[in-house]
Image (cartoon, rainbow, N blue to C red; front, side):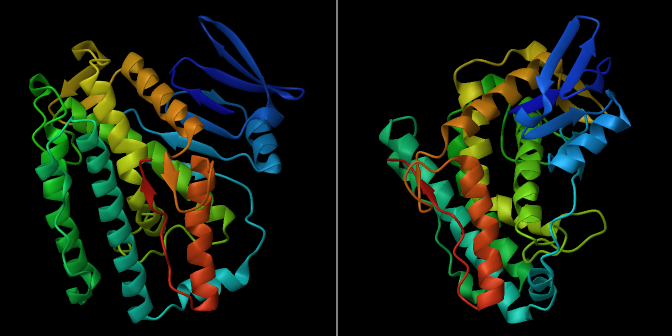
Length: 324
């Protein structure tokens, strides 16, 4: 069970073996051992006794800002998988680039699979479903590889834009500050997805900050950002497009500010989070992990595949998802 708290006036405490969430609207109790993750927006009050209990049980707590920016994660020790960490930190530049190419290729294939599913449903034309397929071997470094990724991304977002009602003013993917409601929703979904991926990285005994595609920066979990790339189309983009296309968002679900851009209000966040976890519970339509794979299984397998590649020298094959 995922416990999501998105109230400034919420107070979380431990009472025996339960999490107690109190707001002016009432009280909610959840057995701690049934909790898989605690997801908190800033502003809620949390007791240290509860945080200690969650750490001891290995239940991660993720913190999000109001605009969906991922702030951090609290989790217990990873079990000391020193061999995996040493392999991750000592990987050669050539292998780093090999891993980065594999991630970009998998993301591109997953994006195209999503578009082809939409084309079969006649929601977009067949011409939109085929994405550019650049020669990734021509990229000599991560920067040039990101340039090729951007070529694919422009075609991908041009296709998805046709699925979103024009009144939302979405012209393409943009980051912070979000210039429109669609990008605000995408930012929030990516923050939730990042928390999911980072948990898998942690439990695989890898370090979330030492990646291959995204540049290392203080406070940036580059590896978690790398490994979430192939999952963005199916576990974030598809959810956002569905909510806007089915008119399940209203203008009142968002607000805009000259400094922070567009963001979701409480009702919009609740709708988005509910949709994310409903999708998470279903699992991918089909993927190369196996039949009846859940999304948590697929996310964990991505990190495990990387760990095995680091230790054994085998090729890294990120998870690929497709529609039945």
